[in-house]
Image (cartoon, rainbow, N blue to C red; front, side, top):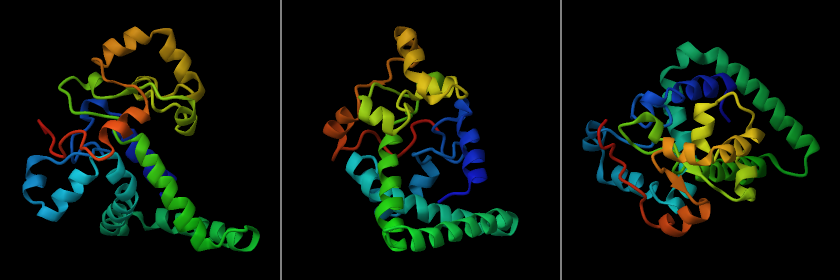
Length: 215
């Protein structure tokens, strides 16, 4: 749903660990600075609080991300229209292929495959980062079980991925296990015992505040 070059450039910015979680700087930040919070309506604040729960993030992350992407890219369309034209052409060809050669209808693919896939991916990124004065302690180590770990290509061991971004996904667990205590010390104890722990504790309870504590 997103052009590769757009995702690549955004994600490379996100890998600047000194800016992690900082709203307006980290493109994957889930936080608001004080000015953004003050300018938000009561409805918008409620939505931000809801997305701090697992259920709220699962239900709202995909439509919110699509809407935010559309607004942001429309503003800079005069500069990026070739990228979107190429992406749109390839997407149309893919949808034509689905329409003619797949058992799924196009709208089934869009609404029952693509959007739910985004919602499921939002569980992985639900609590990957936290605000902390030390950049290396902003990224989680989530010791998820194998179904989740395989689904998310071991990115649950997110600090290892940030420190060694060129390491293949299938080697992340081996590198982590080899020096687990050192990784835990580096993260400042930022450890989650699997996604089940997040769901049971924060399915309906916000994990932290939408307001960044020091941005």
